[in-house]
Amino acid sequence: MKWRGRKRSSNVQDRRGSGGGMFGRSAGVGGSGIRIPTGPGGGGLGIGAIVIILIVGAVLGINPLSLLDGSLGTGTGDRGSVSRPLPEAGEDDLADFVAVVVQDTEDLWTEVFIENGMTYVPATVVLFSGSDQSACGLADARTGPFYCPADQSVYIDLTFYDTLRQQFGAPGDFAQAYVIAHEVGHHVQNLTGVLPEYAQAIQSMSEEEANAYSVRIELQADCYAGVWANYIGEENLLEDGDVAEAINAAEQIGDDAIQERTQGVVIPKTFTHGTSAQRSEWFDRGYQSGDAGACDTFSGPI
Image (cartoon, rainbow, N blue to C red):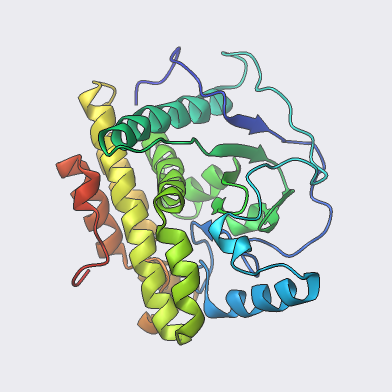
């Protein structure tokens, strides 16, 4: 991907080394973040997490849906973390890369929202190291990147990219870009009402039904990442092998691939993100069409 020397987003916060973890429940384990899976169960938001949120909401006197639909707040301040400006351009390649990719997602979704008579409000992307506090709970390097609807922020410990390359066999800068575009896709879902609707619907669902709904949520985010890849191609910013890197990454983090790798057994009813084939297929659908309207994962089979 051609990214060096290009415009960086102003919506990236650098909290690396800030020591802002404090205490709290991990957003990827018992919190409400929508995340890239890294562990045996495929990760993501299961019914057990919802039960915990309901309990916490009752104790604190907070509507638990506000932890899922973003109505609790839209800022990320006062959580014990210290945000710094990004290093100057050229001083930190990985930070530069993330900020450029985020800017490209903002350019794309601003256009798409305008075309549909809406206004795109960019997400904040938080770079942290070790742990950090989000409105959805404790962001931890072990949970992988995730989107928190309650503060409309994407959290990512950049060491995840080492994991993506070394443990998942998904190297390349465009594989890294795919991860960002996928999480921003969740932000798009939050703005368009998909995530709030999900939060309401799963209250009356069984665990298996909620997992199946989660798969459709995740595949739409994959498709949105593909739409972004198409946009990058139209801007003549793709390099040879870029799309293949993203598709490989989608395949490597499919629920079936992760369960086979970590457990040696695949349990489809526990899937929360989709199979390798589904993830790569929906990314490719977004890429080939370049149309967010082609990303309807809720009508018909997936």
